[in-house]
Image (cartoon, rainbow, N blue to C red; front, side, top):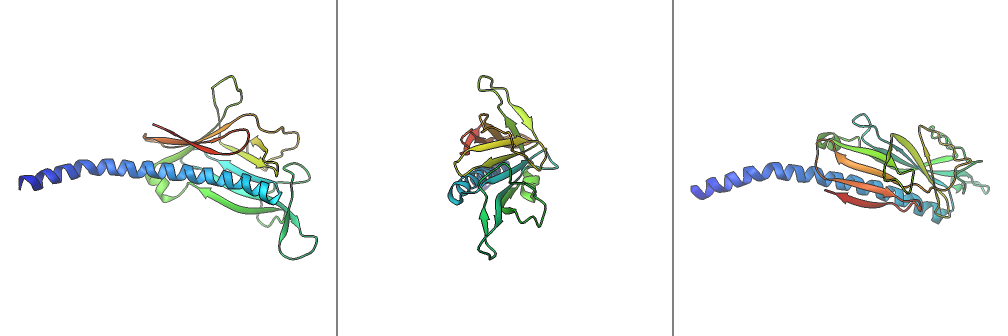
Length: 203
């Protein structure tokens, strides 16, 4: 009986820890999904010779993190339903994400506004490091990263539709910090100027 009681006490103590670990695992998985989407966007731009945009938004519990990939396309001159990629992030490309626009093709997305994220209170915070000599980050709630066939990235912050005309290639890294609002470990998706996203874990 004593052994059974001890096992019961140990099991009861372990349950909260297992719950926290499960929530932390969701944080890691969500950050990994964002990183894979960004990497896929860059690879797609290089492989297909077309401009690819990732739209990003996050502002707390009303938008825990929404990331959507689009490709610039035009009508195939030979006809058919397939469309030809457009190589430029800038004009003549117009990034109009309205449904039915034949020149912007929805490719993929990551939405962190599901039941799991709400239960775990997972949120995404977005930052840009504007100066290479200053570690201070500036928060933003919406922005766009455009990849070109050369692998370059262009960044426009603010609500869309984005206009990349006059925008220089990125020199400032972005950080997308996925965390539980009530504490715990968090994981950052870092987007350096070359656009190749990577993960960084914090404790």
